[in-house]
Image (cartoon, rainbow, N blue to C red):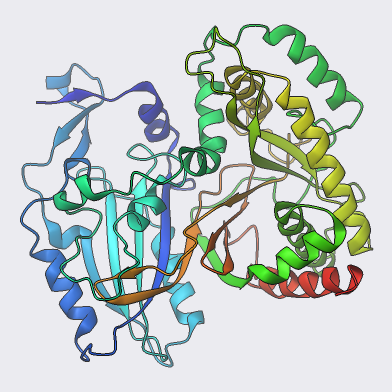
Length: 467
């Protein structure tokens, strides 16, 4: 029986167009087990096609018709075709990571068909090193934030000998999701979209917001870190985008990042932001488009907020967003890291005095201009509220397996939006920090150059820290 699509999911459906596909995705790399034959990828594909029951989430599709009185409804796809959703591909020679990222870029720029359930899973073989890849994408109307990536991680295991494991769309996986995944991990990655939801319709749940709003606005006017930004410069990232995508990914050892943080008395997230700030600075200098003022990133953060008995479930934990100055106007990596650390600390201090609902409401108000500017077609004409989103999400701390295949990499593929042509999302996995860079192919040319600048900036930060 059709079910009305909730306003949040409907907002993502209505916001979608050819230039702004609204799906999230993840790219996982697997090393087949030692006893795997040459047909391992095909066997995985055929096993996926042969599942007995698909989970309900993956069977519903949006419907709008005379029969629904013009309303958008979720309805079960009575002609569900698993072969449309699960696909098997092979990379062209020479089967480098470059060819894989080019394929993912093309797949990510294609809209999901609304006459079917809004998801796809691609099993990809042909990598020269023998690994196989899985690229999965789901519409934001189905899942929020990084939950799409978590759906894949939730079916993995630390046992390399386990077999017969279901994939995320298998109904058997529904009851096997790992309950120990911290809620904070999922919420942190979902902050940008949660804030957008709240910006679309704030409730009166944020008691005491006016005073907090005045304090935060004052910080913004003074060009201090807060949930607001009035000083983000115009940049090449803040303009109208096309639907074509470019995806780049790489990873670096957590130990290198941890050592810098320890030596400089900053946090690992500060170091990640400094890597991004330095990389963006290098990239913009190379194309002669570096603004004089520092770029500003919207950064989701985990907080210990002020407890409030009137807040339902007010346990004192919350997530919000800080507008962080990336120090792209500074040539010295040490100065850049110091600026980021101060900006993040000030922003967190500003939010930690609030209740969880106040924090989310404040983040929503800070995000609201990013909706209004493209809606009024003012991209490139007025200052953006911030220049890009940078998210850092904790992932599994131990090595994971799927039917004996070792997960060697997991990279988030995010959603560039109108007026926000670049998104950087990273997650930790085992002993590495894995970066996924998603951008508009036309607006951000040669996106892969940012990976080189990320590597150079990490080395420069080590040198500045005396490591």
